Image (tube, rainbow, N blue to C red; front, side, top):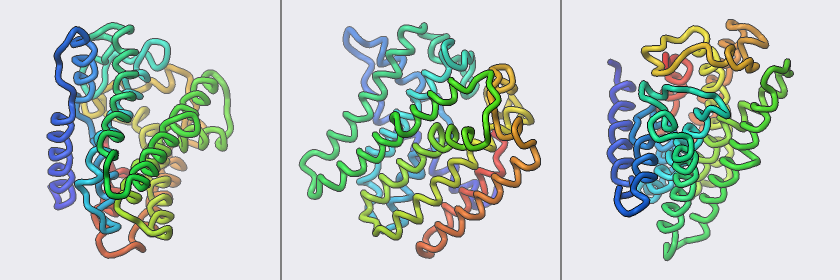
Length: 296
């Protein structure tokens, strides 16, 4: 295991611990919905979005502690989107991260509500940690970034166009719209939020945005590739679901080799952008390489 793998593992474990700390208590008459929320929130995963939120704050010289509630909120929003993605009305998946999906365990009704509850709880966490702060406007700007990139002009907008594009031959431009909104937007939102909390300059913010957009799009292209050539035991889910659901992907439009080339080029541009901020960006540069080389 190289130095980056060790550091990523340590950071993932750190985030994992904080996620558990932020899980709501499983009590009260509504206990079942909190159990369903926590079931998916505690299901593991790469935890990249909270890691990126905190690292964006750190590289611009901010206090990482200030970004933690926002990092946790991002993970809650990401988790709710996965719960809803797995539902029979959408991807109809039985496995997520090697575990039964939320609706298989708790039923469709509770899975829908667990997703709704996580989204609401994410904003409760962010707002409760912004009230009475020294510079509340900064935190409101960060919340706005997350709201915008996870909503109709970001993740949800991309999901809508993705659903409408099933069983259709779409253009690469349309596919880019889906990927840039469904996947990259929330990565842009979390990194911009972290950087804003860290008092980034406009120039730093632009460079972080470029990095986030590129790794986000590359991440989704690699996902498309892994859905064809990936190892189910490493992925923790079925491969071939894109083909099964008649979804257009980078490999289906331009082939595997060209998809790999585009993902690689995006990562190189991302590294150039982030490395021009300062000398404290090695982790983010290495993380970009990890995204292109990952097997799950």
